[in-house]
Length: 326
Image (tube, rainbow, N blue to C red; front, side, top):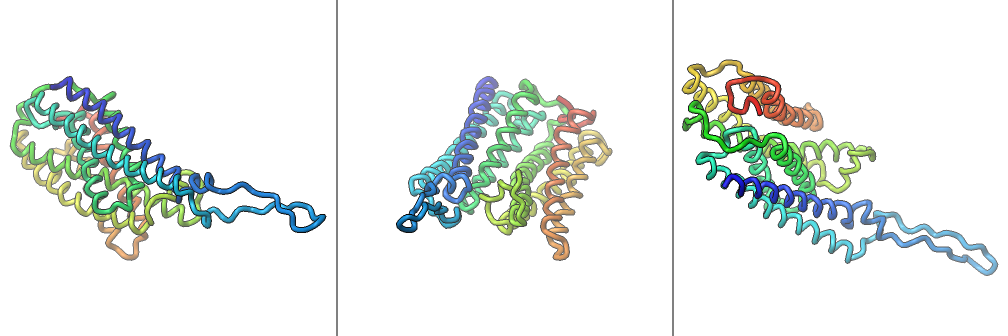
């Protein structure tokens, strides 16, 4: 089962990569994209204005007034729909990776960094499909969701991979399952929430007239207001789960395992930092006097603290948590 899990991980990564390519095709060649419109423009023509007159160039209509060729539009839409289907298939294979890993280990697949990243990314992928089913108009964000899946799963497979092993005695606790499951669920939704947050900042810059990279990516994403609402709702949903998992269930498990509720372990410290930052985002977002871009930057910083908690703390610090090293 362990070997099967490893093979399914490769298939999942390749599937997310295929979805990313399909999304990129729609993103680049859709009828509303700059590239797609440029490809559909007619060539300039030389037109004589009268007998004996010299020919003059007639410019084509502005790009925004030119309808895209139906075939190009249809192909782009087909690529977008294919991307969604492939993403759903990738999520199923991703789930199979986790299930077979858990069967091989005879426990929940949350015992090390490798398994934690697999679980968090699956939650993010599944949450994306749920959101997309309710809001099909945000499909273009799938390019960035699929990219995040490929990058994180690639890191998990190439850097964090750990052979199947039993849990240490301290982790064999009901509160461990409650604590980690809440952390996995909230982290996966925070991961998904980071995507519209980052794209909101890019789209806002694009709307202000910035056309250099990465602001040029904002041309195809949803309106800034829609991205802002999605960012807020995802973070508002994940924050109470993170609060329960990190600051309530975690200390209860710590008291049972180590005889203290809080010991300022590096993992505990950074979990608390993440909680403060996300609380700051929600407060800023609910305060009318705070600019939406300022609030969203706080959400982005929150995800950076989560990455620090997972990778930085686990690699560079020693702690009591099972994820405290490779």
